[in-house]
Image 1 (cartoon, chains in turn red, yellow):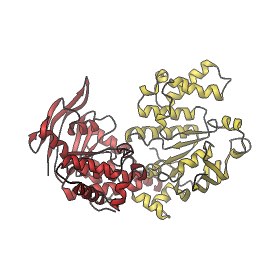
Image 2 (image 1 turned 135 degrees about the vertical axis):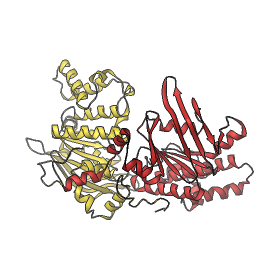
Image 3 (image 1 turned 180 degrees about the vertical axis):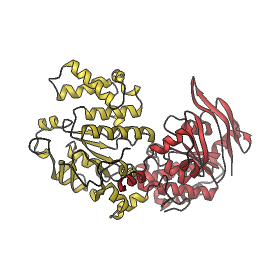
Image 4 (image 1 turned 180 degrees about the horizontal axis):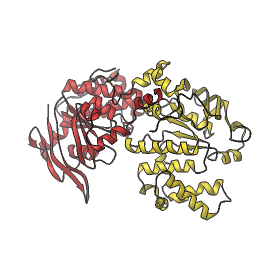
Length: 260
Length: 289
């Protein structure tokens, strides 16, 4: 169980301020949604949390301690924070089998395991993301799987180092609608089992509302509104949140017009 | 989105495109029946939504209508008949290559999937739009061409100063608008839009849809709007066809489809969208369906 706190973090690329004075806490067992349109700084926050970029201002704390920049502590942090990317067609290597994709993080983060133990973990991971029969799936290559199955492999890979924090950057926006809910529900189940802290980055307000406890609304690098999910969506206070809610497809509104 | 003029296609205009018993196969081993016996009628000024998951054949159908399919795809039966405002109906099956070239874009144009990446990166926006006029309106003077290109851009809400820009200098939403402007260049009577807003974020998507609705009201073209986003279709379409495994399983007005879906698959599609403001529907955190 890990808590990560971002305290006043900011990121500037030359003169451009991508993220400006953002603070939030990711707690075990809770999902925080980060919503906003493209270019609002959502993915920069993911990069900062993953230590792919260093914040220009502010700091990131893990269980109250500042994140280490190098050495064993930094490696521990990298294990703790894992990521599921948007595009499962691009995030898996077409040359490698599914088994190989999962073996590598397991070996990297558990160097004392023997071959059969690694194998067992890989199969267990596949079963946890409901890819069965695991033996057979492990032998396959990404192109033999559907988009939803690939994203499940990506989730299994993120779970392999036994992280405390999971960052999911638009994890279902490339998937077919009929399987989106399945993948989101799977993420929610795994989260509960592992008491993961999840940061769900999306521009889909409807799933943000149903999938998260809290919502942070980002606009031009700042958080302009935050609060419990239902509260933010049903009673938006900030103009930008209202604009987002207004822009989201809302069949009910049209149907009411048609019925009138 | 503005209130409706039409509901449920109750007062359809005259037909502009009829698709009769259309079937398309991919001639590979084994043969894939991508589109099976699809019949549709598109009325003037109507927005017809075509919904379905990837692989259901909706894009193949669109390409089939405008005869842009390449082998191994082959139209095995059926025809698409275009009914011009004046004059006799035109069966696209019977057109020769040169006639097809002239008819495409002029009467039926298309906004392709991933449209924002279908602009040529090394040619300026002006040259790409002008190309339409030099090809289809060879008699048009250079000055008039220039003028029309600028007007087109402004019509979709892009500054005409952007004519000299190259695609990489524009945002995704602007490139999408340029593609829509190009599809409207010859004022076609039918526009086929294949996932035109899928890669855009919701705010830009909303702007483009509003633009599209406005232009439709202004110019009166009919639209076949293809997407897997059913809530979106429910908002903008007059009628919606739900496609699955190459077949149209249900075709109904937006209101009827939403309130009384008849087919099991339509119900399943409707249930896979959590509602923004309503109750939680089939989305229950922590239970795997």
